[in-house]
Amino acid sequence: MINFHEVTKHYNSITALADVSLEIPDSEFIFLVGPSGAGKSTLLKLIIREELPSSGRIFVGNTEVNKLSSSQVPHLRRRVGTIFQDFKLLPQRTVFENVAFPLEILGLDDDEIESVTKDTLALVDLEHLADHFPGQLSGGEAQRTATARAMVLRPEVILADEPTGNLDAGSAWEVMQLLDRLNSLGTTVIMATHNMDISNSLPHRTLEIQKGRIVHDSKQKGTKSPAAKKKHS
Amino acid sequence: MKNLQRLAKISGQRITRNPYHALAAFLVMFFTFFVVGAFVLVSFGSNVLLHYFESRPAVTAFLKDGTTTDKVKSIQDTLAKTQVVSKTRYVSKEEALKIYKERNKNQPLLSEFVTADVLPASIEVSTYKIDDLSKVASILQKNPDVEEVVFQQNIIETLSSWTRALRNIGGGVVAFLLVTSLLTTLIVVGLNISLHRDEIEIMRLVGATAGYIRTPFIFEGIFYGAVSAAVATTVLWGIIAWFSPALQRIFSGIPLFPVSPAVFGYLLLFEIAAGVAVGVIGSFVATRKYLMV
Image 1: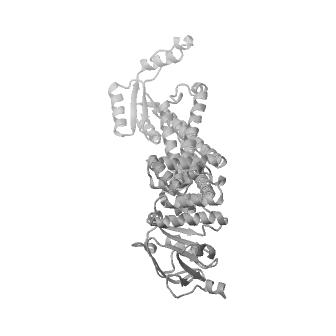
Image 2: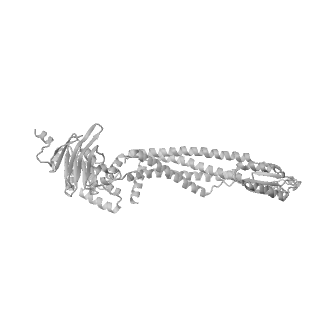
Image 3: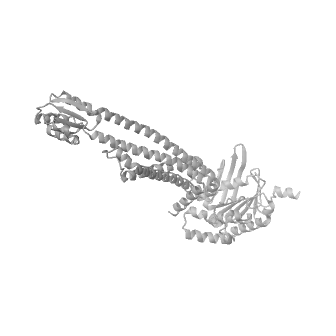
């Protein structure tokens, strides 16, 4: 369960999030939609404590994120996997080594790392590319590698910040199916996208953010998204 | 343990991927530790030299003819009471003749007409500190049985002041070079942090602790310090060994050369410890300053 209680985030005079309250139950798949600069990425950064809120409280499970000491932050980040638009893969490491990286950080022995990494690569259908370097991969393959790295520690939550932003339609669909499969295995997935077609392609809860405020939550029945209204008018 | 191996590997990769940075850091630190080692050896040598001269009889009191053994004993007791005297030795007329003959054995004509009666008996005195030589000389000069007092205070004082100056200048140069090495480590590690910014960001995002991110950079600093110190000491060792036969002739009679391998062993340990300290401090400051973890 992820909870936001009246969370506000300012960057100097700019308000990125304004008084956001939100509840995301375990195992939910949720789309954060809205235009660029709406506050989607800020919301994700607050969950992994990459940013601190200006006011309000954030919980991941029973952990109050904004009260964590800096030495506790790595433990939170092992519970929350992250995927980015630009993949953020280590170019000098192979696909296998990139995926194995979080396990190395945990100090697991080589046999365990090999076994867990191979299982994870099988899940994203990348075993045949294990020895390739990121520069040799297509966009879709690179994003699947990043997804495998995010899930290798079997996190409770996966945050995906515009994961399909750099991909063609076919690769984007592959990544969406992969995230959907992870969600069906019990992982909470929060995906930020400005592409309404993507969010409409799957029947999941959608939160629309504009100018730092949640203007629509598809979970609350009877409300209509401003973006959808605009589309219909 | 496994993690330390992995972190050492990351550190090694970073060093080999930026060979020019590594070379710059190595050369600056090599120069520092070469000069540090040279000053340590010169300081050690000057101490040996000073000790050699200090342990020679520094004050010689020539006694009047007819000075009895009791009076000699009395003079020696007076000197012992001052507690500044390390050794006294009575040289009788016969011994003086023996020494004279030994020194002039290649010129028998000079020895032929000299008898023990012609040469004065003497007391040779050594002190713990050269500063006490004049005090001892003054005591002896006041003694009615002493004919003449000769002492080599000037030679030893000059040597001592040179040794002090050498230590002070050496200390200053070494301190300056150590600070330079520290700053070089800081800059090189800082540059590497900057080059690996993306990698560090990914490490943070996948849950690496601050210690895990910092450690390869600390290892890098230790590597530069330890390797340059070890190489500098080895080169110094080679140079001294090469010139040892010639230096042995110049300093004949003074136990300076060849320098014992144990001295170089201690120097190697000292330099590596200093190198590791410089590497750790430099890289630690760099990670504190440039790593926002």
